[in-house]
Structure formats: C-alpha cells, structure tokens
Length: 287
Ligand code: RIB
Image (cartoon, rainbow, N blue to C red; front, side, top):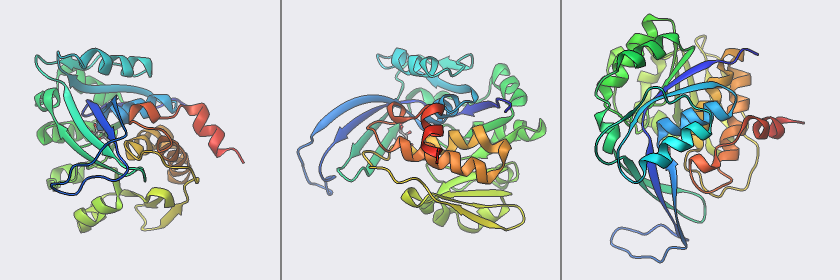
C-alpha cells in the first residue's frame, strides 16, 4: 500500500476538559468529578489521526506563545506529524472548554486564539497543498483561508476532504472544490440539499457506524464496532483522519477502517489522547 501524503489545514487547541455526571442546565451549578488538559482542535486531531493511522501527515496551522504552545507542538511531533508549516503567533493558543458527562457526550466552546491568525496561506502552505494526495479541512480557522486552500488543491489535483464543522453555510466555490464531505447527522440536517453537490458524502452515525453516498447515488452503510464509550470528543476527527489514509482503497474499505478508528477514539478521555494507532485499528478489524 502506498503511504498517502495528507495535508491537514485547521485548528489546534488546548482542551480544558471537565467531567461530570450530568452536564449543567442553564443557570445550574453541578459538582464535577475530574479535570484534564489534553491537546485537541479539529485540525490537529485529524492530522494526528491520519499520522497514527499510517498516513504521512502534515499540519498547517498556528499555535501561540503561551504556556500551552510547547505541549501542542509536542503532541504533533510525538505522533509523527510534519510541523514544517506550523506557525507561531504572538499571544494565546486556541483553547476549548469541554464538559463531558457520564454517557460520554459533551459540550464544547472554542476560543480561537492563534487559530484566528490563519488569515492566509504561506508559500510553504501552498506547496504542501499542491504536493499532497489529500487536503483535509474543517471550519475552525478563517473561512477565506479554507476557500483559498480548496481552490489551490483543486487546481493541483489534490483530493479535498472537507469536514464542515463547526457547521456553517459555505460559498458555492467551496462546495465546487470538495471531493468528499464528512458530516455527522446534525450537520447533514443543517446543510441539507447543498450536500447533493458533493461527489462523495460520508455521514457518521455514532454507534451505528457511517454511511457513504457516491457519485452514482449508490448508498452503503458500514456498521461500527461495539465499544464502551467514555468520551466522544474527537471521534469524528479520528474518523476523518483515518478515512483520508485509506480513501485511495475505495469508500467501503476506508469507511470500515475509519469506523474502527472512530470507535476506538471514544474509549478514552480526551481528544488527542484517545486517537488510536494503526496497529490498534487493524487489531479491531481482525475477524
Ligand atoms: O472535535 C473535537 C475538538 O473540537 C476538540 O478537540 C476541541 O478542541 C474542538 O476543536
């Protein structure tokens, strides 16, 4: 199998994770059971997932100069992600405040920090996008930069995988350059008919696996392996990174691999901490 070169453009955050039996209602105070600081951010999670799953991943993003920055850089390098295009911006790194309840569900608030300074692509970013087999993007950095990246990828025959999260309406130009959209059910409902324009649509279904609709309209659903869920944070990111690694082998193979990776990511607390390595994913897929 050829190792795909995957450029991931997006956010990197320090996740400030609080665990509690039940997430508080508006105006309510509850006692929590634990606290952890875990590197995350949709972009970084997807780059780490792609690298740990066996791809050659490069991260295009920005960290700050605060106390979190060294750990954020380290988690990328420790996972084998190429950080040549990682920028350092004077000021705070991105952070996410996350509350996880006993069922593994969460609420997340992101404060962009250095991610908001990703207002354009550098010459090195453009070279990386053009050289990559696959560009993976999400929507936690300025939209104009995502638009420029997908345009450049399209012009250089780099396959574009877009995970439009946090969900928002996008221009026709962005959709025209997307080869594969990866959304959860809520995002699919929010975006509606515009997703019909995308050649390949992948909808993640939580514990039920994932569904693929191809250019010919054929729909296939892949069941996810059953696991004991601790924390769903980053499971969709892990799915997307793993999907990119196996995309060249066809949607059915890629979805099966990505479902196993995403399921494994729910079995531990914390986004990057729970992202599995290739051997763990392949072990789960063994009969
Ligand atoms: O998708 C999960 C991620 O969303 C978290 O790691 C958090 O940082 C936010 O970006």
